[in-house]
Figure 1 (cartoon, helix red, strand yellow):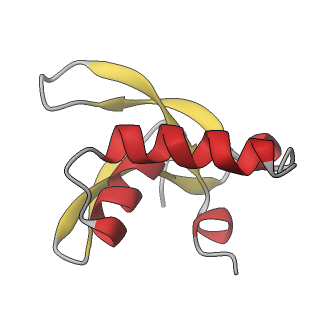
Figure 2: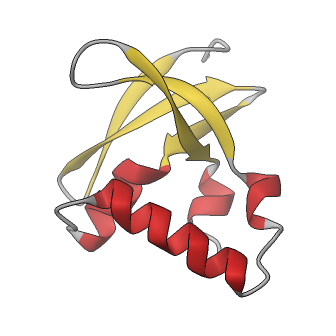
Length: 92
């Protein structure tokens, strides 16, 4: 059984997606998910632009389902990153 704060990596479309177990469920790095889905060379910029667009369209509930959680980076340090539960990531 997963412990709060447990960190892992899943693979989605051949790309690594960081995850952390928090408050009884897994949360996935949105930048990693965006990179896997869009194959964007700059997923951080893609996410930033998408957040801006969604906010301008009135999607204020976006911030109710996204949390900032520390996840390891390629440099070995942990940084806060936008994360969401599978329900949020894969909602229609």
